[in-house]
Amino acid sequence: MKVAAASLVLTFAGSVSAFAPSFPRSTSSSAAAASSTKLDARKTFITGNWKLNPQSKQEALDLATGIADAINPGSPCDVALFVPFPFIEPVQNAVGDKLKVGAEMVTPEMNGAFTGGISAPMLDSIGVEWALAGHSERRTINKESDDYINAQCLKIIEQGMSVVLCIGETLEEYEKGLVKAVCEVQ
Image 1 (cartoon, rainbow, N blue to C red):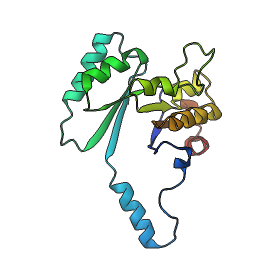
Image 2: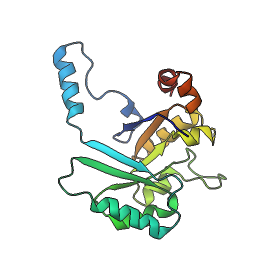
Image 3: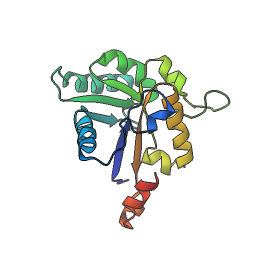
């Protein structure tokens, strides 16, 4: 599916209050310049979501180590890979601290009868610091609503982890010129 999606990287200090701006609001040009400088000083963050690939642990390790080997201490960006659950720990071990390894999704439920669900505490217990929420396929195929995605984000943040909130439109919405409207709602 062709989806023109934008990923909004939300890095938080581990609390729901992180949605508030970290700088005071002001109409002065110096405040605007300070906030712009603050954002400009952030390091670029490049991520890759593996979706339902690769098909074996060895393929995952080969791919991850190939990417990690291309990163050097002088790299101008931070890198994270969002890999299928079975490969998280082996990939973490293979890449060390050269890049972050995140989860492709998390359930907002903390425990209970949610077959196949993965909670934020489960991910945190194996050292996962990042998780995706709101990916287009999960919105479309799994019918994940904005409320459900919001609950995912809140659980990830409450756990002290960071979230990449994916937003974007379907091909049909794109063809109807609804890109801005859909993304604003998300």
